[in-house]
Image 1 (cartoon, rainbow, N blue to C red):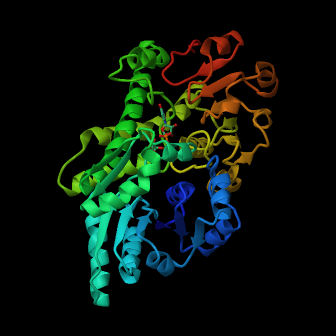
Image 2: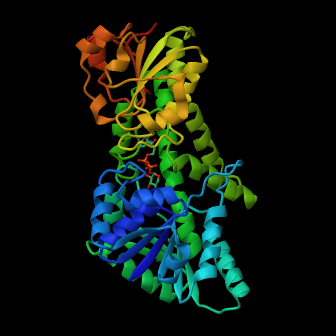
Image 3: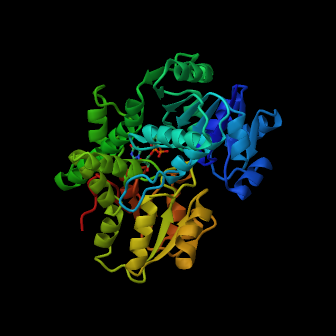
Length: 443
Ligand code: UDX
């Protein structure tokens, strides 16, 4: 079997590489020549554990190819994945320009029956538009060729994408014909062998599943963050409450950790996009509007705590920030709480020194020379007024109180992910602020 994956971003690259791993012939296509020439020489443009090794292995075995030649890759394939970006437009709805351009190219270059699958996160109804664009191009060419459109959303977590692809909780596929279902069933067979389910459904349901899944997960986070904020007011501890509610199997104990808000390329964008979709049908998704608002506020919560501690005088203060990526094990800073927090601190006149194990180069793009970049976690602590933990990388989990005390000007820690032991902090004489945990020391 020969397939093409158009778009070598995060989703396209992981998808293409994992399919190549099953022995089929995959061509990854992108219009970005620099990206393709880098990929050809084994340079991976994103940070994803295990991906570089897997790419190299499959390139060496001759079953993973990179090209800018869209025409050739479409001509030679039985199935095409559209995995190009769908950036949010100004009003929050997904921008489909790239997706539809690929659809047009498919119509222009296809020579035999083809299954065209949208892998990018696209608004409900996109498959219909993709179909129309292909048909339009075929008509212009004056040829009649059979093709099917399908929707196959991804559920990859950054930092764990390969494992998520190889051992999926489920594979969701929306098709319109039995023929398309047969092709996709064959393609995904290696991933379903150990009981991982593949769910076939109609196209709109598959498109909706992606949004509903991310919206549900975002809801869990905003819910727990809202409760955490109330915990502080009533003197409760969210860590206890989380365990208390999570033990009920109907609620579950995963993905209900309070923190500095959710970020990344999916949740913020997808929650906003589904709200927009609903609006276009004259319906208001009131719950998700609240989820989005709570998250915007939650990203500011650490700055609020910092301001309160320093009695609204942040001018001239220096803050050591640990963790910049939107979550550990990725260098992705899209919609990261760190961006909001650091910008607010700078605006209030503070100096910020940052350290992140892998996101430093991304941070340079965001902050330029408005902040200082440390060479290790302890370097940024020197003469800082407080430590602010934003992303819970494993290397930040164990604190050396002696060094912390020696380097920091004040013994104050703001913990945006509740990773530190509050009692231990207090025993060591630190002022500790978590999320949804009652401060031991009131001022
Ligand atoms: C998410 C979905 O999990 C994935 O299925 C989908 O395909 C893409 O979006 P990802 O964006 O990689 O994946 O990150 P995820 O691990 O889900 O975390 C999202 C955000 O939620 C992070 O900012 C994280 O810090 C935050 N989060 C997560 C919490 O604040 N609390 C939690 O309990 C879990």
